[in-house]
Image (cartoon, rainbow, N blue to C red):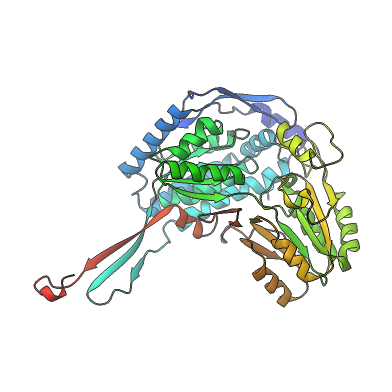
Length: 490
């Protein structure tokens, strides 16, 4: 595990970083044709750098270079073992620059440095490495075609992929997308969120240093109208992989329908329940996981368990323990490793989160809040995306499961119970892509992650399933009959 530094040491690192300030296209940084965009430290309001962003002309250029690279085959047709070796070299370069990347992520997004150092950067490295190692270990198939034919079912890289990233986990979500997409042989163009472009640009530079060919991995910073929409509508983009809000996800479906019907994979919002049944044991353990699920990354997490549905028999003792546990969650300066909650990403988002609270406050920080609400309260139904836990009490376990499903979302859920039968029954009955039992989590790199209903569809991140979404399945049919025997020719 990485040893955390002092606040002063992190500040010194931040002061020395040479921050990227332009799109990364065809193997180099080049000023974009779009407007200048200020990258701001949300904790201080200071401008970190000015980025000359991309626009539609840059999108066209990047897609052209991505297509050329894909068609030339230097990456798409490279032996999977060689792609693996290059991606592992990338992991080694990221590891060497891990502290710099952690500080970049913290000062740009407001995330606590302890999370960036101990979770985000290590998991991003592990993700890319895992998919790299899988590249030369995925077998295609032969069909049961009988004696007169051989049928091969093979995967081929889908082509040019547009990857649209959120601002809440910039480096991890980058890894979730480029890991399987590059391992599959695709060319990838990344649009980071406007608030958090820096780490994606740095990783693109490192990827080229590692040996990823020009045009295979490009990064276009900019806003939705100038970059995201042109990527979504482009006739030569084969796929969009999007993580973000449900409303924006709908836009990419429209863009695909209006252009070339490109494949669209969506991982969107969530209003995820933590269900505590009447027989839940070890309430200290339950409280620890509920607090972590609700307040990790200041609740700016699509899989945050922002709804606590608790049986009345255990409500009072559980809430007492949650209150005690929250006293350890300090809010403040993201570069201070003592803090568990940093600054929210920008003023607009702060205002949105505070609109749900009676105490409005000022500045970039919102301390954890626990609200006792009714099931139909908007704080119980709408995705707040902040450090707010909404709690409702139920009289029966059946009602708890019903409320867990009473949402338009279906990304994750957690169930706490001492009964194996109840746990498995609840896991079957709750409509969500991931259901954890007696813990909060998302599984790990080996398990597919994605949602039901309006939380998204089209594919899964993580696990071998992630490779499937970046490939096309092709059938190759070989007729083995003797052409001289006319009766057998079909």
